[in-house]
Image (cartoon, rainbow, N blue to C red):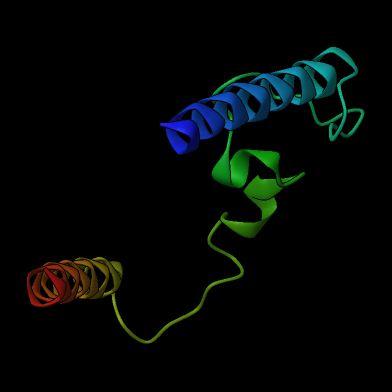
Length: 92
């Protein structure tokens, strides 16, 4: 019983401290880079300055057509999905 109470007290203290830390970081805008504020939901490649110059088609040259790269991407994704579901079943 004492262990359960101690665990509950610890959890309350931990999550309260965590919430206070998150609020402190948010209020003081820590971790943000001036001039790179894209707002909520902007993630992945949106935070790379001048990202369009890297995807304008002039930097990527291949002897294969684009549909081949897309198909390869989809096959790789399907293979990785199968691998992870197989691992998930094996580890349960």
